[in-house]
Length: 337
Length: 266
Image (cartoon, rainbow over all chains, first blue to last red):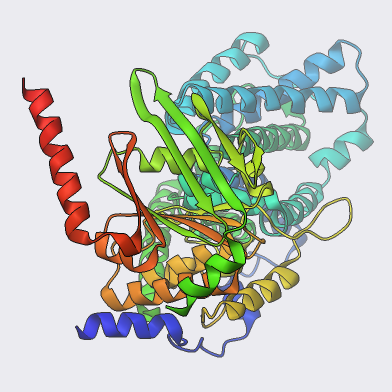
C-alpha cells in the first residue's frame, strides 16, 4: 500500500522541487555537453600541433568540413525528430547542382538556375514524402530506394562527367567559393532552423508528432503534412549544400557527396543529441556535432593519424554519444521520481 | 454529494448533446449499430461496455475524428455533422483519450497548448512561450492540480499527474462537453480518487457536461449521474445511477453474453 500512497501524494504536492539550476543551463544542457567535448578536442589538437586551429588556413579548412555536414544534418534532424530519416540526401547533393547547370545552359539567369536546382531537390523530397506517407513505406526503405535511383539519374544525365560551375565570380564567391562563405551560410541556416524548431508551431508539432504520432493526430495536428514538409526541407537543404560545395571546388561532380556525407550528417545529428527514436532533437547540437567531427578529422590529419584510425574514432564517438544520450535520459527520468 | 443536488437545477434545462440512431461501418464491420443518447447540461454520463462494444468508435465520432455512416447529432440543440477534430473543438467538445495524447518529450505547458499555441503577432507567428507558460500555470492552479514546474517534460510525471494534465488541457479552452476515455484505467485506488475529485470539482464549477467511457462498474455508479451499457454496437441498458446497482448491471451483461453464445454456437 505504501506505493500507492506515495503515488497519490505526488499528484497533489510538488514531487520534489526542481534543482535550482539556471534555466539557461538546463535548457541548453545537451548542447553545452557537446560544446565542452568540441572545446576539449580543439584544445588537445592545438596543444599537439600548434598549427591546428589558430591560423587562417586551418580555420578555413575546418569550416569547410563542418559546413556541408551541418547543413545536411539540419534537415536530417527535423526528419529524425518526426521519426523519419533521409538516406538519399547525399545523392540529392550531387543531383541538384546538375539541374542548376541545365537550367543555366538553357539560358536561365543564375538566380533562376539556382532556384531550379533547389526546386528539383524539392521534387525529390516530395517523392520521398509521397512514398513514405501515402504508400506507407518506412522512410528508411523509401530513401534507400531513391538513394540508388537518384544516383543513377545523376550519372545518366551527366554522362558520368563533371561540369564547370556557371555564373559570375561574384555569384560563385557568395555561393561557397570564398573562404568563409559556406560557414556563414551554415550559421544563418542554423539560426533559421533553430527558430523553426523551437519557436514555431511547425517545429513544436514535429516534436509532438515524433513523440506520439497517434496522440498528435488526436489533438488535430496534421502529422502527414509535417512529415511531407520535412522531407522537402531536408532535400532542399541537401541540394543547397551540393550547390555550395560545387562552387567551392569549382566543379560539378556526379560522384560528389554520396553516402559518406549523408552518414556524416546523421552522425553529427546523433552526436549532437538527436536520438533516432524521434520526439526530440536539437539544431544547435547538430552544428556542434558537425564541429566535433570536423575537429577530429582535421586534428588527426594534422598529427598524422591515417583515415582508417579516423573511422575507428568516429564509430566509437557515435556509439558513445548514443549510449550516453539514452542512459543519461533514463537516469534523469528515474532521478525525478 | 452536494454536487449531484445543485447541478441538475442549474443545467438540466438544456441538452448539451443528442445522438440519434448513430451507425458506423468500417468496411464489412458494423462498429455502431444504431446508438442514441442524450447528455443533459451539467450531467455526467457513464458509458460501460466490454472491448469491441463500440465505445471508442462512439467517442471518435463525438470528437469529429470519424464521421458516422448514418444517424444524426445535435450539439447544443443544433444538428451538426462533426467534420473534424478542429470543428468539434470549435463547438466546445474536448476529449481526453486513453493514451492521453501527450507528447512525452515536450513540457507541460507545450502539451497544454498543443495545436492551440499562442503565437506572437508578426509575419513569422513565433510561439509566445512566456504567455503559454503563465496561462498553463494559472489554469492548473484554478482546478487544483499542482506540479513543480510547467517547464517539466511530461515524461517525468506520474500516471495520475499526466491524466490531470490531459484533463486540464481539455477544459482550459472553455470546453462545454468533455469526453473522458477510460480516465481511471491502470490507476491505483488513491490516485484514481484524486482524479475523481478533479472531475467532481470541474462539475461543481458548472458549465461542463461529461461523458465518461468506463470499465469499472462501481466507480462509474459512484461518479456518473446516469449510466449507459453498450454491447456489440448497441445500447442495451440505460438508467440513473441511483436506480441501479453493480449486481444488476453484471446480471444484464451476463444474460446478454449467454444469449450471444447461444446464437453463435448453433
